[in-house]
Length: 288
Image: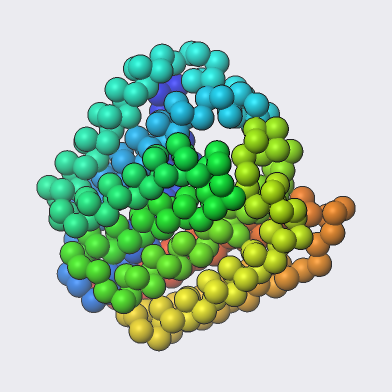
């Protein structure tokens, strides 16, 4: 049963978001003092709140999940976990994460993460995901909160560097999410989720993805020009941005769009891990 309750928090999503949280923390720690304990408390608090949001998502999306092959065997869909118990579980996770961030980081970080929670649970899960092609954009806002939370945990103020970091991960989310929607196109159609590839077709989705990747590249460069990143960041960012741009601009047809989208998706993971890793590596010479 413990394993079941752990599974409805979507551990894979939590890990992915913690990587970006660490990226924001490492970036801020290049100019502000920070400790390993602060990092651990930040990661734990963010993880608990994300876990709560994922549980609520699982509860609310039971009807959608039952129509998708990938999600039809989830425990809440099959009734193996009581919905009321899951809701209480989500509330406990939310309160624990909020208290941890408020007490061990700062109130600003707690408020920003809670705003991200509201966007994910209410605006994305309960509203736009089901009704609008702009659901992915709303979801990208909540998805970009973890790196900003990591940044604010150190600085306790919002700067241009923090805004660029938030924008970077917002832009990253869009082609990443559209790629998933493209190689799982049939699932999304069956569930009636109005993502761009379903509503407007794969060709239009690809054009949007290319535009978002170009914008991502520009913001990544801007973060180097106005932020506290070093030459290591510039080298790694240039390499992964070139790589992601190259695969995204490859020719796509109705015959190869699934393989194309999977390649774009895999490269998007390399991008986010590379950005996080280089910011951590740059931090090594500093006192931490």
